[in-house]
Length: 331
Image (cartoon, rainbow, N blue to C red; front, side, top):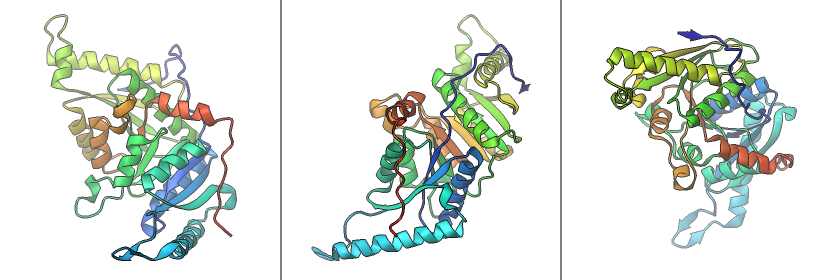
């Protein structure tokens, strides 16, 4: 079923405007699709991009206790900076579109997280860098760690991502956390789409355990459980879609979420999957929800993962009065 805007539904709190898109780049041509995707999103939303490349910290060893010294590290950094300039030129990124471009030494995921925090970045764009015969089902260690610790939405790019995406799959579980991620994701799409055609398919997987929950007030058939879930999903979408111009289709999938989402992507290919992570602070901040983790690793398309709103809003509120400090390459 396709849902239209409900004039009486409450307006959702919008995601902050996209102003800075942080892109992690490997510099080589294999990372060009990642940079292109982040650049296209920034251009569509009227934002700027900040490119960053991280390389291992410390001089490499050539023998037991023998390093090549700081001079070598500086030369290595300079060579990476030159490659970054080449990529910027290769992809036609104008100076006015750059919030900054830098090369740093250190663990890549820490560099990305720290840079995003310092810039109050609104979106982090990384590539799914798994390699080998199962590359489509793997997530690179950097992308995986960024997903677990980022305080703002993270876009994991696989292949060429059309901007705006034409077909978007939005798995939800009807919880308040899922509603928050759904609202945030739709608002980000609206900023990028600018009135363009986007088809959003909101899906809720009705597992066996979920169906049992519908029997609290007496026995109901599987058909009745699915109908009741469909009504709840319709209400969820209408309450959280605000005044978007594009349509949202609501569909109940009978089965376990992680498997049904992947099956849905196999049967109805999408350009993008957007869903929330369920970290609640503390140790949970280091763990993606099992569904989000599976989809991020195995989806055949790009995935937008959205952290709990309080996390990235808190970081933003702390820094919104401080303008980003663009860092450019050494002359």
